[in-house]
Length: 333
Ligand code: DGY
Image (cartoon, rainbow, N blue to C red):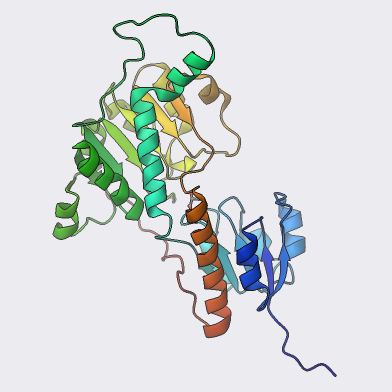
């Protein structure tokens, strides 16, 4: 009779780096979706029903109806720092540990946030389309004139690792004055090292020339940038969202961009991604990218390894390395 202990069963919900799967296969019975099909809720339930472990991505929804069918599940390792795709209350009620990938993607994501800020402020997307489409015919004094970045005021909503990375790039590279709003204020040394000044939400909206959103999406931050918030911003301001689509009321933003309430926006995340609101696609003053802020090869590999490390640590020691933090309290007003 074979008395070898059975290995935990693991579902890898989307394609990931083969070398990371190779690290996992000695320890798990792995069912991996290397075809990279986007699994429907039914397909996910069918494949997860007998699994103890799950490695998933930010586009996989792990909610109460799914968990109700997956009684064996012990750990859900999200290959993302954000975890709005996970129903944390339902996971916790079933004793399923949830982990994410903080730290390893901060600089890559901050780099991209800054690239979007530059693109929106200096109209590079619009300008590039103009050249490619043969619409560049002459020099004019105000042709493609945008907003300066150097020496302007950079606002950051959500001052975690990514927000601080964007802030440092602005302050040190472009001589920007940095203001921020966050549920927790940085300590004095943290503020001085950027340097950044903590302000209330109203001041952030009114004084930012460029406002970058890096705040986690939660019930408290859903549509925190709505019509009222946009109306308090400068007409020359740009808005960059590298957080989650739900932080911005997209309908209100479309109105604001159409009516000159703010000058421009750059969005890496959307309310119903990968679907993008058709009105956004037709607006010239918005830069649109496909949720790719963490997408350097090296960083995506680090994210996949950290998700794997969490699975290995959990099944070998009973403790995950980077569990998601407890549910966030609301932002202060
Ligand atoms: C994250 O890690 O949260 C990024 O948005 C990639 O999904």
